[in-house]
Length: 276
Image 1 (cartoon, helix red, strand yellow):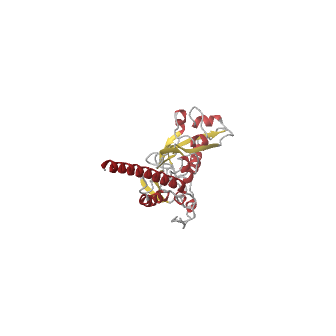
Image 2 (tube, helix red, strand yellow):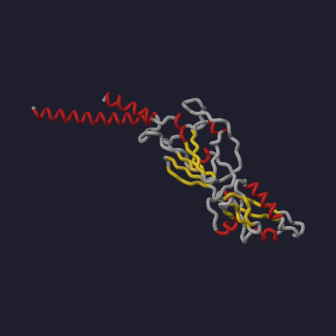
Image 3 (cartoon, helix red, strand yellow):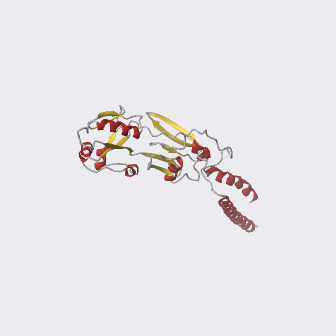
């Protein structure tokens, strides 16, 4: 029994998932938590080839609205950001960014948009379209709404996989993980990977999500089409996630070992008696 306990106890200690392994916002320098440089400079997303843009023109003059908008009604920004797919009449307002970095917008033709923010595209379209409304009386002013649609990210972790819609302009790594249901007890938080494709090139960012420093680092915000990958803790095929559970497992194992030992001892004694 003593030998069983001596062999089992170190295994339970190794298998135990402590708070140091799973807690977020830990101070760098403690328990092997790395520090990251303060490099946070959030920049508006720059449109890439393959993105889809929602464009809707507003004007006080109904004639101007009908000139630039197909039949039907537009959808507001919150609806766009909360929808992973736009269909039906909404597709009449979306434009694919082509391989040459342009969108083919009616009357304007091919407008370069790659590398621009939605705000810059809005101003460019307003300048282009305003030339078509001269002579429409006193209501020549128009406003253009531009949003990126079908924005999403994916998560692959020990808890499962899924693709999630980006609900707003900026989403942090914490918000992304929360949407995915957090990281499982045996997910390796020290080596979180983000796979990101930019203009045909793929980059992999590796960081320790437990570090408080990531709030001010380049790893804090995710981007559309990011894939977040969390591998399992190395060698973790069995484990318990608290000291209480460890003690419970040890006690159960010892009790079962005692039962087996007693049963075997009785059988041996019975055989010896019958032999005599």
